[in-house]
Image (cartoon, rainbow, N blue to C red):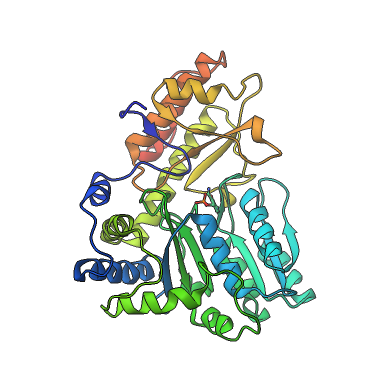
Length: 391
Ligand code: PMP
């Protein structure tokens, strides 16, 4: 790969050099005082990033799918009812994991590009008692941003535990775990958290930890059981050595650096920057006549754009855009896989990235024989970035 290519897929994203240096530093012993301090810092910072001062954090070697399975495997027992607020491919994955752990799954689906709303969820949870309700904060296959604060509000009085998949959202899209009453927020390292793939991250509310303690049957997984990890995490946070399974010491050192950078920016500033960059991208796409998969701006994610290929342009567009120096992703959702493409915009995304990506899409479209006026997209982006209204 050309090192000057701009990586703009929905994860892994481009990583900060200081984060990458932490990865290449000599490995520490996982029971050394230095590593214990690093791990403790990571856990405290993760609570701050998720705005979850009361939560129990978990940082485990694995990808986002492990974080999903840890949440489900520790909270769900065979025969429990689970409701999946379904906005795409990763909601479907959550349902598969729930079923594997013995849950009876009901879907609350919206049509493609939309999200169920709070009223629909309120009705669904009044019809049956659910042990858990899952929400995908941003579904990476559709680019749909769920109205997560309203959805969590709608299920508050139902008593259901909420699991929010933040893999394509955490540290990019606004989320206030404690204030909004989410029981589990889960993510992975490789997207807006800004660390190469390999870490599953969860923050778990006291209520969910209590539900786990009150299980009637043992957790069926060994590696994913909170019972194995809770004492380790408590020890590290208390500054004491502990061992269950070897922690990925370099990734955790890199996470310490990235979380420090995220908190130095400030959560509200970070959410606002992602929103601003997302808005600039959407202005660029509209000016190029490209149609977003999300049906309205309120459900359009700020961390990625999922777009339909315009008429007459096939998926070879992705390769043409790469030839222009920007790596983007093809479609993922089975219904629109060959008809859509996706651009990630999270973590350190800035104005230059937006201009470079929209410019490369313009040139890729022209190379595909699609008529666009050169500069139309980037000019619309510049108007957003400079707060200059169209004349
Ligand atoms: N949930 C969402 C919303 C995702 O975008 C992804 C990954 N793209 C996952 C879960 C699964 O994460 P991983 O690929 O790290 O296992």
